[in-house]
Amino acid sequence: MKKSRLSVVLTTEKKSQQDQILDRLFDYFSKPKGEKPSFDNDIDVSFYRSTLNALPLNFHNDQYAGINIIMLLQAQEDTGSKVPIYATFKQATTLLEEYKDQLPPQSDTFDPAKPLKGITLDAQVVKYLQSYKKEGKPISQSQFERETDGMTFKEMQEKGYQHRKGLKPYKVFPIEKIKHLLPQSFIDERPYFAKQAQLEKQEMSEAMKDERFVKKALMIIDAMGVPVIEKNQDRAYYSPNEHIIALPLRKKCASDKAFLALALHELCHSTSKALNRDMSNAFGTLGYAKEELISETATMFICLNEGLETFHSHARYLEGWASCFADKKKVLLSICKQAKDAQQYISSKVAEHKLKLENKAAYCVPSSLNYQVDFSAKYCQELRDYLTEQANDYGTMIPLRNQEIVGFNYIPKGLEVFTDEKSVKIYDITAKNLEKKLAELEMKQSLTNEIDLYVAPSPKQPTKPRSSNRLSM
Image (cartoon, rainbow, N blue to C red; front, side, top):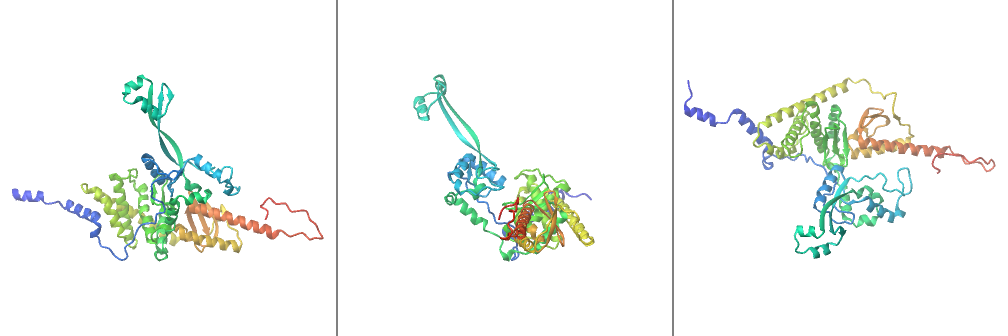
């Protein structure tokens, strides 16, 4: 039986099932914040920022011109500098020369004669230059304006007058790099330093610490095998080129739950390598927005699959990016599918990791280590205290709290640390800090042993002075 003309019209006007589903998806992603339910256990997925957001200043405490502001803001983001005060190499050299009596003494890492050795000029600014000439010879601006008043451009050329404009680039660096060398008076005269110091003091409160969430995040991180680096910076990101994840310091997160949420979101981005998602899209493009929606939706799926709290911040984050697809709702189907693929990829890795841990043979320290710890009880305790302090700052150091370190082996981008109970992989700054601490303790113990071995000569038996290639005590 044929449908009547009226029936055909009604069918055409009525939305298809796919369109209805797309509308429901879009409503979920983009519902205004005020309409979303809120609960007492909603998580603030954020972190305390320690970068001072302010107009860049030059060495003389004056604001830069317009184009330089943009260039320096970009440089600040690229380098992670905290205080937007910049100086040229010459300006900094002159200042330190003036206060050279206050500089630290000569050491293996510092030479008072070359206090800026190793400093890189990270940023570029420009000067607006104007030159005035008459018959090839420089003249002042006032003379030029007085003598050419009323002339046309052609007349000025015919009479040998020239006025040229241009930009001259030059390099500067954030002077916070040498804050430890600056005279206190210089710092006190620049309020930016005090304001940034206040930001630096903001840390996670004791009430918001819950290491269960950090340990859960670390377990998923271990399962994925992606190096995670904690930096004292105001952003979290996944680097496709290096295949690493960078997070703010644990202590700068609003809570340990926030630390977990940030880690999961970036881990979902990291699945792009295995699942062939395009990560080359620039911020603000539809491709970038799509990847953010995939990652955050996958994070929500993982929380549900792992029995973790689902954060309502997921919905708030999704809302901002979903608005890009108001007239391209079909893309949401692809987003949901790819988010599910990312979640399944991570969940399968977690399942494999858990199974491997269950079936793992009894733990033993490798017979060959790049570095082996051999400290007395005193310095072993100092090392334990150090690990406790580091765990408060860095989430990735929590597995080493209350552990006896036996030694370590080098791995790409970091260290695999072996204790008497387990092995822990750490990267970048945490690895460098630990190496530095071990070297410091080794030096302390060596000097202490020298003192203990030294026996003062008896007055009746003069002895030849003992020679040593170490620092005299």
